[in-house]
Amino acid sequence: DTEVTQTPKHLVMGMTNKKSLKCEQHMGHRAMYWYKQKAKKPPELMFVYSYEKLSINESVPSRFSPECPNSSLLNLHLHALQPEDSALYLCASSQETGTLGLSPLHFGNGTRLTVT
Amino acid sequence: GEDVEQSLFLSVREGDSSVINCTYTDSSSTYLYWYKQEPGAGLQLLTYIFSNMDMKQDQRLTVLLNKKDKHLSLRIADTQTGDSAIYFCAEIPSGGYQKVTFGTGTKLQVIP
View: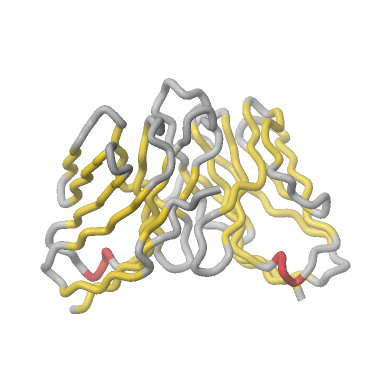
């Protein structure tokens, strides 16, 4: 069982729809991440939140909008997506983002997104 | 930038040992990780090694680190069918503590 919970597990949306992906962790972690993973590829970093503030945006198109309402929750708002945005979207958390501590990423099971 | 390289595919018989290799990019990386991804799931942290270590053993898993060659390997002893998955190595490059760089992934197939 993963300690990072993502909902929904699967999502099919049209290019004009607006939807949101949700992620929750109760490990007291202060860093949360969104990754995008295409089939047979490693995860690619999209966003990092550290202490509820956006610290990294990897030049992600504005049709993806992250939100961190509190230290346990992370959302990814989707609008006007393209078919090539279809992928597995993974949320992760870590205790902190500092270099001195061992702070591995803990992943959720992801949301499988299909854009039609 | 450079990729963290792994061979794409490995097939072993149940009960044999598996060795998955990884060539990473940053000799200053402090921690190196191995993750396992089963179909339809996220990535599960298997083990890690700190850069001042050469070897780490954790039950059936042995991690070997050759810093000179920037080479990392994961040995799984007595491989079981439940070990079938994609394995990713990962590094945290120096100065990029929020950016974990994942390897290209190795698909391990265990034949009963």
